[in-house]
Amino acid sequence: MTAYLASLATLAAIFAILAVTLNFMVGYAGIFSVAHAVFFGLGAYAGAQVALHLVPDALAACAVAALIAGGLSLCLALPALRVRGEYFVAASLGLQMMALTLFSEAKGLTGGLGGLIGIPPPRLFGFAVGALPLSLAALALILLAIAAMARGSFGRTLQSIRDAESAAEALGKNVAVAKALAVAFACAGAGVAGALFALHMQFVNVESFTLEQSVLVMAMVIVGGTGTLLGPVVGAVLLLSLPAGLAFLPFIPPTEVGAVQQIIYGLAMTLLMIFRPAGLVGDLSRGRSEA
Amino acid sequence: MNRPASMDPPLRCEGLARSFGGVQAVAGVSLALPAGQVTALVGPNGAGKTTVFNLITGNLRADAGVALLRGQSILGLKPWQVARRGVARSFQDLRLFTHMSVRDNVLAATERSAWFWQPGTGRRAREAAAEAALEATGLATLATARAVDLAYAERKFLSMARILAAQAEIWLLDEPASGLDLASRLRFGQLLKDARARGVAICLIEHNLDVVAELADRIAFLDQGRVLAEGEPQAILRDPQLAAIYFGDRPQEVA
Image (cartoon, rainbow over all chains, first blue to last red; front, side):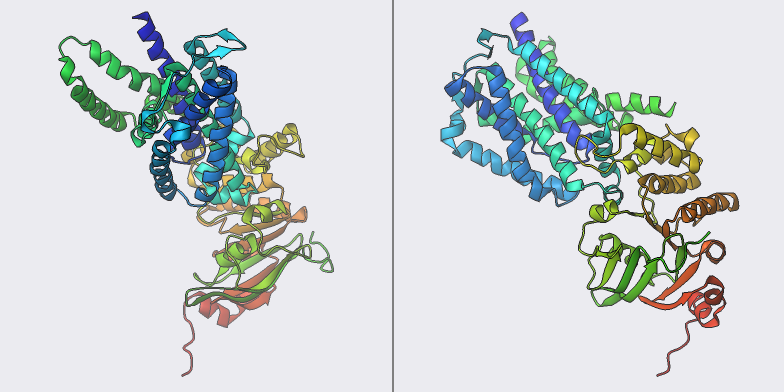
């Protein structure tokens, strides 16, 4: 039971990293991507390969994963960022579909549909460490970085682009560079989450990097509160623990959990968007800022 | 108060042209913006006034013509590059950073680098410039409000505060005084006069001829993409032919 809860908490921390980094793109820079799971996947495969073939060191795995996910996001984002708003959503959708095919076909790197198995558990400088403290530490570091950036000039630049791109340009801001930096940072963060995921699960396959996963992370951001620091963390914890919580309710037959979960998800999302359109955390902070 | 006319105008355009499909929006506009003077662009809707701004700032590519900033061509540059060379513009629809605070709107105008740090001026200097812009526009008490929550006139002054904080030598203002009441208009006029005294070259698109008469040193009258007349405000404003065009009684063309 403790092991199960620790595993759930680790997953929550990993998905919280995904949600806060996606929120950095969506909430601060106004770049809507439904391809976040692609960079999660790139990081997971990169981290797994490092652990399998080089060293099972968590820091090395995370660093390589961040470099690969962040670097590839730049190559892919630079042409895609030339389009605006809803067109970028379509471009990222295409990327998500293309990447999934590549993940299944590039068997040498990803193990194809079967995935990569036997990934060694994480170590840090030669010592065995739990995936939970690692994930929590990574989440804390990324949150600190985002908080610092959001308060500084970079955060203002991204928000000004989100609110009025042409006006930001007219004030001398190089919009393309700022957007590319935001995307690279967010995707590098997703890569770190992927490496931690691989080390924690000791197994990865393409099932974890689908469009549904990207949409789930987007839902975590929106439910928690777009553009807030901690909202996506709340959203990640909530959406991850909901299915686990339902499984413990005695009056739901185990065979029906999936269906009930779908209904509760849908209902909760709809009600939330009606009554708290800015998300769970977003509403509160908006009330505060007007006071 | 005005600088001597012998000084070379910092911004000069010649023969600017641009068409959209079959419509010649700007057909060879030549315009010079001298330092320390307010040049008003006047003309009916669709005359091409905003298009001239967009050609200068690089938001639109010119089909023909030249635009020289201190003798160097700025055509073909991107909007952010033109801005960094000292050309600030406002938009008719303001385009404020709606969900940011008033102070952050103005601070953002002092920060040009897209990177994580700001080279050049220190943070203190930028914050001081932002505070000064807030003071000058009367927005200091609203510094923590979000732009989207401001009243109409306050939004227009926030747009001006961003321009002030950008510390540019050339201001291109697209209907900055429209819809302002008399008191606000006077306050706005004072902002322009102060900037003019500092040597800023100001170009103003304005439909209210009272505002033009009060603030403009020169008028360029645009119609159908051409500068029909240019000169002293009183001469232009008294011209009956221009008035006829402006007020919609376009003389029938002889067949």
